[in-house]
Length: 124
Image (cartoon, rainbow, N blue to C red):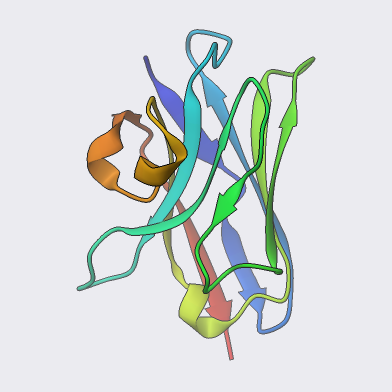
């Protein structure tokens, strides 16, 4: 399964971006879809996750209230709407799919399909 994340770019502090994620399978089936990010010299960090079939999304504290996961079942696309961006949000953002209970969603090892990532740069 190939995942493609896109929509990154350069934005000013306080701006917004919407990332999208699609799957080569054309569907996310019953997967959990996760968003992670990695800044230079830092470990990959959990951002948000949700189950394709529905449920309650989970967010990292650092993005809660600013980022939102949404799903378009017709377009078979998952989005990460990022508002009130901050310079510390600068990173390569990855979408990924996996399975497991909610308690495992923040752990990279819960996922096994990773896209190539899209760069998000927030200028101050």
